[in-house]
Image (cartoon, rainbow over all chains, first blue to last red; front, side):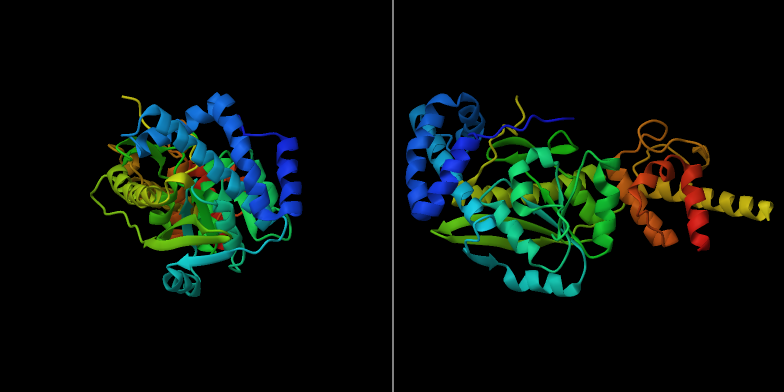
Length: 295
Length: 93
């Protein structure tokens, strides 16, 4: 199934902010965002509607005016992180990045085993990917290039010299043969776990409702007996990001129990971690998609 | 020689069917009811991409084999017969 990838802004806008970043630095570029995001709040009805699905659930008690204000703050926050992404990946800007769960993550790397990473559309996952690029392991992103063309271009995914490759879920058997082989050979296989893009999914409790999350990553980890790391990134200060890799799971199917029910429990653990995150960093959830089941 | 190959293939097919039933969620299906030319994915047994993970893992753990060439993957994973042939051909090497 094909998805029309839509992004906010056009090439002129992106180039304007790139030039501004070079000339005025990050803070100078951020300044313009406050004005630009007013435009999107007033006129980009699609984006506002998409953001509102999350905002309405994260701030259920707020009235509609406050909800619009939360959407505006979300747009500004995303804009800042897009500028940061450009600065980090293309302009060589070095950000402070701290890793929560450093010791456990190092133990995982020392084991030499392959592992699964499940991220989300929160914080700056592209900055998180730059960390994975330095791991001396081949990292495979399970995604369609058209779902995130900017990330592919900026991370040089699939280019000869990169240790970042992609496996398309539209490929042969959903890319699962390649993903399984990758883990067997000690690779890292990464998924974004908060949008299913039409693939196998399960209903999970999230922010007061039932949301559909994909479970392929969890099934892959259980079958291959590979550890699964929930990796979430958050901007905690100017030029400072924090990656949280404290949740490392070892999922194993129990014989005699329904596999789907087991998968549901595991995905719920991920959703729980994500919910804790959005409670702490409400303006860094960039889902922009209604993942909840309509009742 | 030919008879020896056939015997070996028969044994591989039998083992494959038992492994498929034991590892995949094939409710009400017995190994002896799976036809040799049964299509594995989509039609036939109706397996999906998530079942592919389990088949790749059982190939690795039970036969020490891996499918590296994805362009050959469609032919290899087509049916019990084609999978058994692949195992027979590659287990010899």
